[in-house]
Amino acid sequence: MRVDELLKKRRIHRHRASPEEIKRLLELTDRDIRMARLTMAEDWDWAFSIAYNAVLQSARAFMYSHGYRPAAEQGHKNTFAFMRAALGEELASTIGYFDRMRKKRIG
View 1: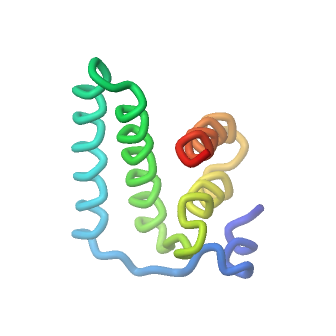
View 2: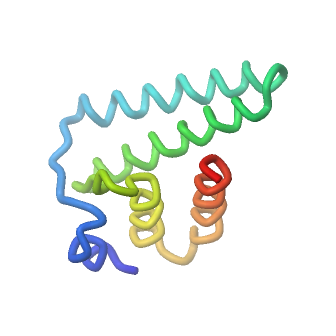
């Protein structure tokens, strides 16, 4: 699915993010990566959830920097749909891995 199709289906919306919003998301990403590393030795499942959150926050920073945000309903799913549309087939395998993380986290 292309970005324009995601917009038409209202899975994403246009969003003019401030540099501070994007910076905050990247700061959350850094924090979560550090915490996931620290947590791995004690609780792998929790570390997985924290690492997933780091991926989600960095994907949202990417979306914001390109002028979009995910729709609130199924926001995680829409974020990865945008990433696949924006980055194309070259990174589809990696994005698919992160989308499987999303499914494992909730299911």
